[in-house]
Length: 341
Ligand SMILES: Cc1cc2nc3c(=O)[nH]c(=O)nc-3n(C[C@H](O)[C@H](O)[C@H](O)COP(=O)(O)O)c2cc1C
Image (cartoon, rainbow, N blue to C red):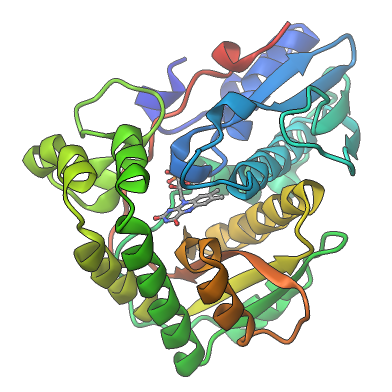
C-alpha cells in the first residue's frame, strides 16, 4: 500500500497473519505520521527479535534552525508517542523504555519498545489511531469557535516526567504569544543562512520528495509553490511571514507552551507529551499548529517565560483551534526506508 499517495491509511489491511516484522512495518506507518521540524523526519528504527528501537538520525539536525538539537529531540519524542499508540492499538506492546540520558550525536537508541505479534486490536484507541490518519499541522487561520472547557480540562490531565505546560486561552496571552512569535520570525529571517536552510527544506506542490515542507501546507497555490523556496531563500520575507503567523495565532482558540529543563531527554518527553495532547485534540477535530520562533531567540524566550507560572524555560509551543481550511497532508518516507540493521 502506498500510504503517502493514499493519504488515508487503512487499519483493516494490518497483516494479522504476518510475521512480527511485517506487523511492525505496518504499524510504523502511524509512527512516521508524527510531526517533525521542517518535516525532516529525523528518526530511524531498528527491529530486533522482540524489540523495536527508535533512534535519532542526527545527520538531520538543522545547523541554523535547531542549533541545540531541541526540535530534533522533540520530533523524535513525537514519533515515540505515535509508535506507542500504534503498537498499543494493534495489540503488540509489551513495554517501553525511554533513554533518560540522551546525548546529542550518540548512537544509543532514544527509546526501546518491547513487542510481540498482535493479539488483536485495542478498540479504545480507535479514535486516536484515526486522529493519526487525519492529523496535519494547521498553518493558516482558525474559526472563531470556543472550545468546550470540559474538553480542555481532559487534555490538562496528560503528563510526562519533568515537563510542565500552560494552556493559555485568554485573548491577551494569545496575542502576546503571537507578538513574540512574529518578532522571532523577523529576527530569524534576517539571517541568510537560516533562510537558505528553510528554502532547502521547502518543496513545491508537485514534488515527489518524501520529506520537507510542501507549499500547499503554507497555503501556497501551485505556481507560487514553485518559486516560494527561492523567494524565501534569497529575500528577507520575515516581515510577511511574521504577519501571516501572527494572524493565524491571533485567530486560534488557545496556545500550549511546554517547559522543562534544557536537556535532550527532557525534549524527548516534551515531544511525547505534545504528540499525546495534540492527538487528543485531533480526536475532537481540533488541530494544532507549531510555532517555535519565540523559543529560538534567548531574549524573546525570556519574555515568553514571563507568561508562564514556572521557573523552567519554555521549550516548545503550539496554537490550537478549529481550522478554517483542511490542508493536504505532508509526505512521508516509507518506514522500510527508515530502518537500520
Ligand atoms: C519540533 C517542531 C518544530 C516545529 N516548528 C514549526 C514552526 O516554527 N513553524 C511552523 O509553521 N511549523 C513548525 N513545525 C511543524 C512542522 O513543520 C510539521 O510538523 C511538518 O512539516 C510535518 O507536517 P505535518 O505535521 O502536517 O505532518 C514544527 C514541528 C516540530 C515537531
